[in-house]
Length: 181
Image (cartoon, rainbow, N blue to C red; front, side):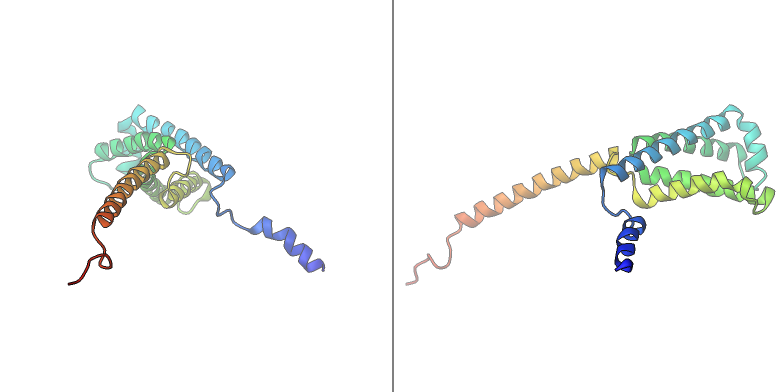
């Protein structure tokens, strides 16, 4: 008896949320917005002194064309963050942001080894971006609106095709109705 009540108590605690309910989707949208807003700051920071960033980070890890890659990182963070906030092209934007965080993590490991205080922020960002690469933007996003619009148009086209098939089927005499001589 106690075991069953314990199971009833623990099941909701451990059961993952697999339903697209409003609470989880709202949290998803909030996470997307907050992480995007924070990353805009990082992109603007890089653009504030691109030469310094190129020397201290990009050249240090040995990438060629440090100024070019510094601009790539800064604009990936700026544009990708805005796309992430709006929830449009979320997976490609999140993938670009995830890639910049992998490079940042590599830089941190070269500088300080596996120092958690030095790595933690880029790892947290990378995990958030990986989440959006895998799961997309969620229901409260421009991506979801686009998919709904595309599905509605596809259904409209499909229903037109079905109606044409039905009309052609009704116009064709059936084998049972044709008299044989």
